Image (tube, rainbow, N blue to C red; front, side, top):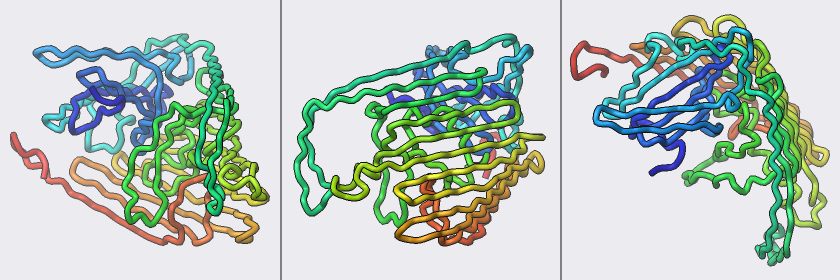
Length: 414
């Protein structure tokens, strides 16, 4: 027995199915099952990797035999997002990982001489006039609690608070339009069922520690909010939804229409007014967030997009906007660029203007790996809706690795 999604190399054998339902060679749904039937699922972004915070409903079972093991997967159309067309074509990749050999076997053949996976996928058809149907979900809840806890919002006068029979109610809703656009709304959400933060080593940490998002409301199509198609810029995310700690309401529209990828989010956050004493001028006040992301795919895995984020609280505001682009130069080389500016108005700091420019060149082949990253973040750059642990950086870094592959039975790489 193990936890769900604990299906990872190098310890486990497993099989993996990747479905590129939009057949755009950029986004996909990934499903893993090990020989004992443990599941893992993720959103796959080409050149960005797998985001295992994604969860959906699907079935699987396994059977271990003398010759090996068998895996069955059953994935409902309602658990996927796709365009219903008269003659749909999906991309598909199958992989078996053999832990004993540290070996991954693919169908169709995925060559290490070519950078990327979805650009080497096979195709599957036969889904004519298939639709997930009307996907409407309404999940109400109500809870009551009675507790006594220390109120330390005023460090000079900590005291016990006793709350008697405190009630709470809320509603989550999900509506799917055209089988590919998803509207998520929430009123007074309850995240008590979400697992606690995974332990991290924070000893001698100079900067803020990153924790992944686990709350279901923020996970639907979360990869459509990605600043770029690359994981290179994870060090400076322009949208980090954990900044919205205690929302009263929220609404998200995400999805794909033709070559357009979109994501919009509005929400409030009560946490700034809850972490100060009641007599504070900020007591009970809320922050408000608005985020917009739009990108357009063209050519062979090329895209260009724009992003805008806004956080406002008690007269202060922080706005960030800019554009990014991703270009596949050849079968081995890919480049990215992102440029954004920030405008911050804070009564205590005044007005601040900053810039963040980042670029990367990535090359992958059977015998080599190369990466070059340029980063220029000015001292006054701020993103209160994102995660940028450090500013005032100007750096150029390069990494190159050459793999020798001698012919032989036992040694295959050095």
